[in-house]
Image 1 (cartoon, one colour):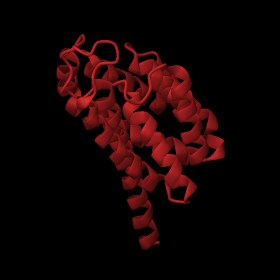
Image 2: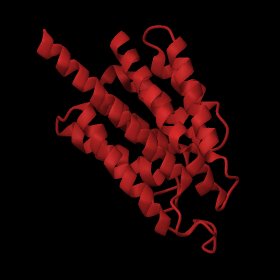
Image 3: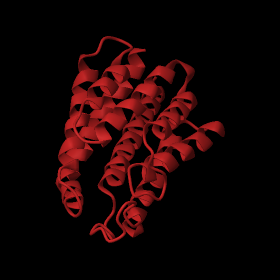
Length: 207
């Protein structure tokens, strides 16, 4: 379990670093039609998750991160907490089970659907894509890399989506901040897993 904990901690370090770089831009996106604080909130949630994972006992890093992230402000932080908690509970059954549990929890935790201009527009297709690649027998790192690409493209496409509740909303033409931050998170996760694979390969070459 220590190896799993190390992966979680490395991923969260990368996620926090990536969100820190773009939090001001995400706040600007959020300010178009809302309070302008999504970037700050999601960065704070991820930072709390990182710190909790670092302090967690062996085998509990992902559970601790999920609990801490879920206590953050806004809508996205509690949703991330639930999704990560579901993945953590499924961790003993492997990556595919984790992805499927996360997707089921996402769908059960919000009434938003793809096309409603929300975090679901990136997370749902990305998790679905990861399921396909894992089912084919691909590695978690490769599946996550594909999913991150799907999420990035989907986040950009939310710019063309009208607000679910108000078609005259000023955010038409702007990507959704929650969709954008989730794409950043998945991109950082993919980078961390790829780096972990490279480190393992280097270690094997030197053995």
